[in-house]
Image (cartoon, rainbow, N blue to C red):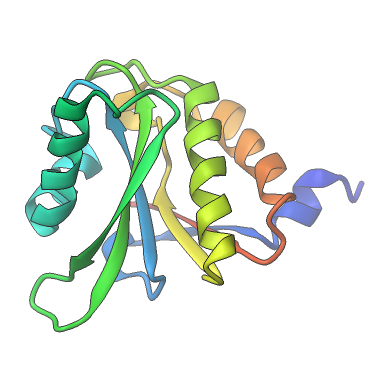
Length: 162
């Protein structure tokens, strides 16, 4: 059966490895909307990309950090002269196991709109909402992102896992 999962597999690629070693110019990760980047990939982003954390806090205080939203920051890579876009994707309201599939899809869709409009060919993300977020990658998040990927044939979504 050559259904949507087969077709989308060309645009959604799973990679075992470090998300921050990607060659992509855009890296997305999930955040909560309560101003806390204290664990998981968000904590790594907070430490590696202070500009992304500062923008996250600014959005939180401005009241514009809403579930399903995203914001991007052009940030300096650690120990490098190069820069990368960091997209904070609001995939859950509270810290902990509170990710919602609808918010993941909405924030990724908005991010992909911008990635595609700016001509970037690759969008690198972790398994959003899984792990601390509490969702199941294979049964919930991956199928939804495979369907979403069909709308963006010009963008490869790299999904990193350890």
